[in-house]
Each structure stands twice: as C-alpha cells, then as structure tokens.
Length: 106
Image (cartoon, rainbow, N blue to C red; front, side, top):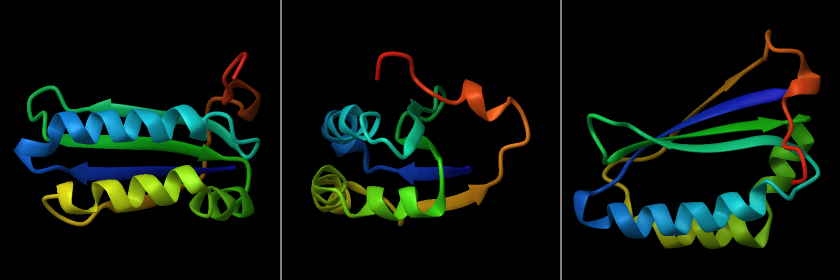
C-alpha cells in the first residue's frame, strides 16, 4: 500500500469552488477499487490550505487513479485556483493494519 499526502494552497477567492470541485473528485475516487482511503481536509487556522490523504493498494492503483476522467477533470478545474503547485509526498503505512484502510459500503 502507498499513502500519499498532497498539500494544496488555494487562492482565497477560490476556496469554495475548490472545495466543491474536490468533493466531486473525492466522491468518485472512493469508488475506485484501487483506493483504500481518500480523505479531504482543510486547515483550521488557514482555510486556504488543504490536504488530500490518499491510500492506494498499489503503485498501479495510483497510476490508474491519475488516468480517471474525474481526476483529469478535477486537475483541469482547479489548476487556476492554486496559489502554488500541489506537493505530494508518498509514504509507506506502518500502522494501522492495512485491513483497516478501507471504507465500508464505498
């Protein structure tokens, strides 16, 4: 499994549009067989900063996600909303057990 933390800084005037576009992407992403988890969070003290927490079953699942229509549409839609380029860092999960990294009924 691979965990990817994606830090995102959005221009203030685009916060609500970014949230809407990213929620749409997230709703589709959790339906992908290769995604165990896809969390979208907003920084409390600085609401223009967001984090995506993506857990993939394999590197191939991550690549497949990047080729989906919903991801490509999201990437295009938010490109002008970003205050700076997205930064993604890959991690290997150590805890909890991989069986816990999934959504029930997704």
